[in-house]
Length: 291
Ligand code: 13P
Image 1 (cartoon, rainbow, N blue to C red):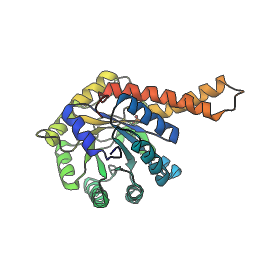
Image 2 (cartoon, rainbow, N blue to C red):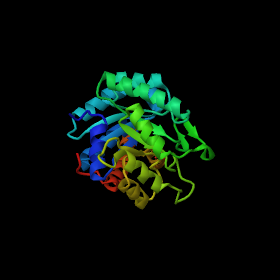
Image 3 (cartoon, rainbow, N blue to C red):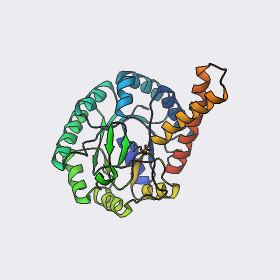
Image 4 (cartoon, rainbow, N blue to C red):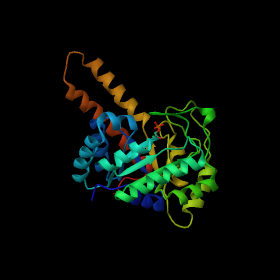
C-alpha cells in the first residue's frame, strides 16, 4: 500500500490546502534520507529523479530500491520522473515501475505539447495506475537537460490551462507562474500569484480535480511558499537545495576528516544533512502527520 502514484495524495492535499514535498534525488543515499525523514514526520512523499540520474542509475535499479523502501514504510510514497522531454524515456520509466511521470513538452507549441502529453497520459493510464504531470508555459532556469532562458520563459494562460488539462487527461498540472529552477537572483522573485489563483479556481474551483505543481522550490522565502500553497499549489518541487546539501556536506566532511578514508561516514553525514532539509520542508508545506 505504500507504493502509490501521486494522484490521491495530491487530491487530499488540494482539498485540505497543504502541499506534498517532491524531492529530487541523485543517488540511493539521498533516496533513503528523504524516505527516513518522511517516515519520521508521517508525511506522504514524492521521490523524484530527473532524466540524467534515471539513466545513469538505471530505472529498474531505482524502482527496485524505491519498492524495497516504500514497502517497508507505512506512508504513501510515489516515485516520479521529473521534466522528461522524451516520450520514449517516459514510457521506459513507466514500464520499469515508476508510479508517476512528467512529460515536459512545454517548450513546444501548444498543439504539439498537448499531443505529446496526451500520448504519455494514455500510455501510462493504459499500463496501470501511473499518474502523469504536464506543464504549460515554461519555467526559467536549468533543471537537468531542460534549460530555459529568463527572457524566453512564458507564463501559463489560464484559459489554455483548462483546455490543456481537459484534452490531455493528465492527473497533475504544472502551470508556469514565474518560479524558476536553480538559485533565484533576488530574494523576492516576481511571481504571479493572481494567475495561480485564477488557474486553481478554473481547474479545481468546484472540486479538486487536477492538483497543481509549483516548480522551483529552492530559495523561495517561507511566507511565499505558504502563500503558493494556500492558493492551490499541492505538489512542491525541491531539487537544487538538495544537490547543494549533498556536495557541500561531502566537501566539508572530507576537508575536516582528511585522514579517515571511510566512505560510509561521508554517507552518514550526507544522509543526516539531507534529512534535516526534508524535515524543514515537510513542516513548511504542512504535510506532517498527513500520511
Ligand atoms: P529547484 O531546483 O529550484 O528547487 O526546482 C526544483 C524543480 O522544480 C524540479 O522540477
